[in-house]
Length: 107
Image (tube, rainbow, N blue to C red):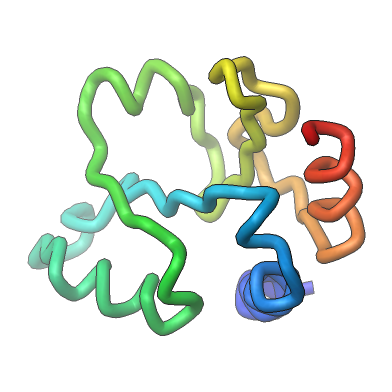
């Protein structure tokens, strides 16, 4: 599946009640890597996937929690205490069913 298909499934999950179960954050990992960095452009793009998704920019604290990222996009899931329970920075696809399973376990 493509990255776009994954975002479509994530949007469906959020629209079907997932907003009560998850907070979704998009990390601006390499926005400026190939040209002009723009937090506004990134925010518009992320809001286009779903208005509830928040975008944050990379900094040392964010890097500590998400490194090493070897593939973008990479998916991570953290519990309410901040402990990472899924994701290692590689391309591990999360479909709607797996996201729902993690959300139920974390309730």
